[in-house]
Structure formats: C-alpha cells, structure tokens
Picture (cartoon, rainbow, N blue to C red):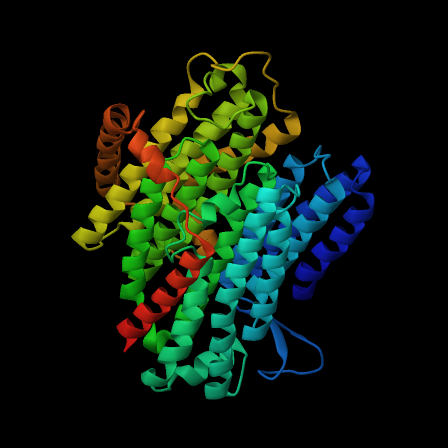
Length: 525
C-alpha cells in the first residue's frame, strides 16, 4: 500500500492540471484527499505493532529501494494529509492560475509523503530537490519581478545546502557500502566515532539549513510569506514543509547516534527560538509575525527533541501542534487580509465583530501557539519544559514570553473599530469551515493531549495537576508582562521596526552555511 501514498497525489495532480477549472473535479480532489487522510489514519494504526516495508522493484533487502513506515513516519504522513485536506477545501474557489496551483500543491504533497516513507539516503535527496523546485515555482507563482528574485535566491541557496548533503551521503556510502538507512544505522552503531564526524557534519549542515536553524532568520520568512503569494502556499511553507526538515533531523540523529551532537543543537535551538521570537516582535505585517514564529517554534521543537525523556515527547507533540495552529493562523490571516485589503497589524481592527467565525478560529489558534491552559500548545510546552535544567527552562520561558508579546500585538486586530474605509468583504464558507475545524483541534489537542500523544507516538504520559497549575501561573504572569512590554516598549518603537527589516544577502547566507559547518566540525572534534 505504501507506493500508492506517493503515486496517488501525482495522478490526481495531473488530473487537476487538466480539469481543475471545473467544480466537479475539485470536489473529486477533496474526496480523494479525504480518502488519503483515512488511509493515513489506518497506516498509523497498523504501525503501532510493527514497521511496514515495501520494496520497489525486484531487489529485496538493503540493496533495493525500500519504502518504510514506522510509527514516526506514519505520524508525519498523517499530519501531511490532514493539512492538505484542509488546504484543498480552503482553495476550492481559487481561480487565479488554478490548474497550476492545484497541480503544484498535490506534487508537493507527493514529494513530502515520499520523503517521510523513503528508506534510502539518495531517494531522500531526490525528493528534497523535487520539493525545492516545486517550492520555487510556488514562490514565483505570480511572476512578479521581485518574487522571481526571491525565488532564484531560494533556489541557489538550496543548491548550496544540497551539495553538503550530497557529499555527506557519498561519504556514508564509502564507509558503509550502502545507502539504505536501516543498513547504514546498523553499520554505524559499531563504527569509529572519528570516521563519522565529517559525514555527520556535512549532512546536518544541510538539514539545519532546511530547519532554518542557521542564521537565516531575516531571509527565510520573507521568502515564505511574500505578499503576493497565495495564502495556502504561505501556510504550507511555514506550517508543513519545514516539518520535513525536522523529520530528517530526527532521522539522522538516530543514524549517527554514536556522534550525535545533541548538546550543540540544544544551544542552536535556544538561539533560534529567542531570535525568532524577537524578530517577530519587530514586525507589523501579520504574515511576517507568523513567519518569524515558525523560526521560534522550530527552535523550541529542537530544544525538546535534543533533551530526551519527556522533553522529547513534548517536542514530538509540538511538531503536530505547530502544524495545526500555524496553518490555522495563516488561513485566518488570509481571510482577514482579504477582507481588510491590508496586512498592517495597526490598521486592522474589529475582526470579531465583522467576521466572527474567522475571528474565533484565529483566536483559538492564537491561544494554541502562546500555550494558553487547556490548549494544544500548553500540553506540548508542558512536556518540553518537564524536568529540564533551570537555565534551559528560563530560555523556554523567555521564548514563550516573546511569543506572547507578538501575539498581544497580533490580537489587537480582533477588537475595536475598523481603521480602513469602505465595505469589508466577508470570507466565504469554504475558507471558514477548514479554519474553524483546525481551530477546534487546537482546543481538543489540549483537552485530550495525553490521549493524542498515546495515539500518535505511542507514549503513555500523564499531566501532573500541580505542575500544570504552576506552569499555567507562569503563563498568566507572562501574559501580564507581555502586555506591559508591548504597551510601553514595543508599540510605536521605530528602532524595533528598523531591526525587523534586516535582510541577509545571498553571500551572507552562504557564509553562514560555511561557518555553521566549521563550528559543528570543531565541536565534534
């Protein structure tokens, strides 16, 4: 069954490229996506007991090309199909270049699912490159000159990062005589740690770039949410695509377990989380606030999975949490921008009164990302900060405070009277419905957090009431502090606005990649 998870989206993509202008074709596409989501749920259920393996071609064993679904990869497939189902409904009435957009969306889904199921290193390389090309086309979707510039820069820096990965797997093949991930893991378990340093540093440099852990904070968000990009493209790039890099991060830490530099990535995750939250505070465009929080939340995920124990479980759950609430936030932002004809957070007011359903759904996602009690983010952050060193816990609290400050600013759009003049259009039901459903998941994921962790990841965990109340109290204090900081420090601060406009050039990005590789090598040696 595994090959069909990859093949089916490609077939439907070709079908939609020809027929997507017809409503019946779009209904069929949504029905297909619903079926694929149901199949993903089934895949999660059957991988509870054992790994599912399918060999492509006539070769069996580590010499063949294998598709492997374990519990973790099945979870990522489930997240992908869920988000693409929501995106399919949200895009139902999209008319502008509809055949191309629907084609690209389903090709991207196929590449992501293939990456999660791939059992060998070279197939991962191919699928990552396919995904990169599709992303570039989506970034340049409207053929605006400035967007073409961003798209080409995105392509070039990804090619640079890809060379690190390609050299790394070449070195892996030289050491192990295989590209099959399971075989390589077995060989490396007994290998000399010194021999693994170079391939690990090469591969993890590329993976860190994909995770935006290398200092790309000013550049990557600008590419992901360029103003003319369709909302669903922004949601995919910030809410879902980056999860493929996190998946690879987890996978390669397991492959290179004897030499895995978890403490190094713990520090990098903290720095990314802090810097991403700070840059989000400096923004006035609601999409840029969301984009920079992709950097901060991925940093938080890396902190969790680098610590192990309950923090690892919290990091895994935060992957799912982030995909849900970030997609919801971009959906809500898209409807708000469409109605108000502006993305300026200081010019949008009265959303709850003008478009209550969209406002409620977006508000639920805001409560999710800030970690409000009983919401999905509170559960994942609770486990991330469960019994962690004091200094790391302080960093997590500061990251959360930065998130709260920027979303105090963001939440100002819900209240007051509209600043813009003229009639404000209301969002259509096809955009509102999936946004509301995802918003509801943001709440349900908090109420039934431990059950969802058990279902998705197989870990039986409990929330200690006293500890949860303590962390909720810290959250409430942070909300008060965040409001005061926004009111008296952030609001109207022109210096922060200038800092928020910092941009890294192509040369600076390449230098950052090289420096990251050099520092990682020094740490490992």
